[in-house]
Length: 114
Length: 114
DNA sequence: CAGACATATACCCGTCAAGGAATACGAGTC
DNA sequence: GACTCGTATTCCTTGACGGGTATATGTCTG
Image 1: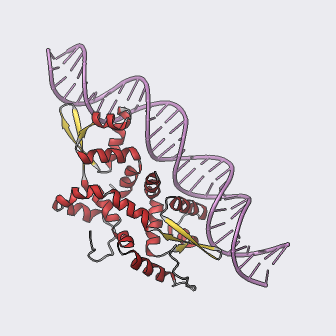
Image 2: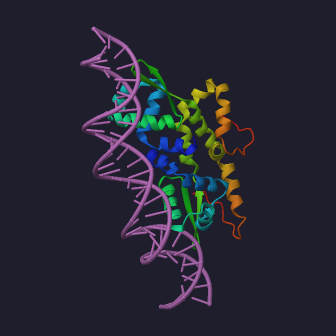
Image 3: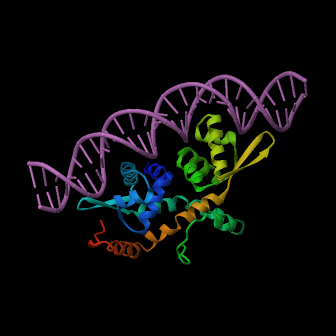
């Protein structure tokens, strides 16, 4: 059920941008507004969607509300595509080019997979 | 083409169901229609969306069109959440570093994991 | 070639989500 | 308490999306 909320929350590019922003560090709303170039109300509404999907949590700091990423739903996504992982672990060679073309930003050194 | 198409394609639960069906084995349209209980045209439209997102490919077999899963876009999804994986794989460590990065502001909150 | 079958497309409609403007709410400050 | 700042919520409009019915396209069979 909340699975649907997770997917529809991440379906929006602005919200994925927000999630990416919060991956770097928690941020107050104003900072997010500036970063994604939307109006403040729109940003707040996106944050509400992310909040209700469980993707972010809020910490109140005076008048500011600092949003931070909650890893659990993204871990659920990882669990979702678990059954599909075998599809490309078997045909890894034919896939390397596609992966290279689509991955935008890999700031991580060789990851401890599995 | 873009990963926007991929996300919006997978945002729909019916399409995720179709993808799950095709994970088991390739299927002709009629079988998919029956399985997800939609009308044939609706199913065809969903299949078109999945096709344009690169998630499925078609093989023509007489009058039938057999749809099969293409693993590449799902692998791209896997690549997308690669930067997030550290959030739960080494949960405490990563969280600690993120909270530490917060104190670049003038204040520094206690690391209240709640 | 006609007719049956499998799938795709066109068209219409209801619903819903996203965006902006205005406004309300809450927390600090004096 | 009044004022200000930061954020959330409401109202409204618009455009995209999903579903269904009807129809077109293409393929096989006789």
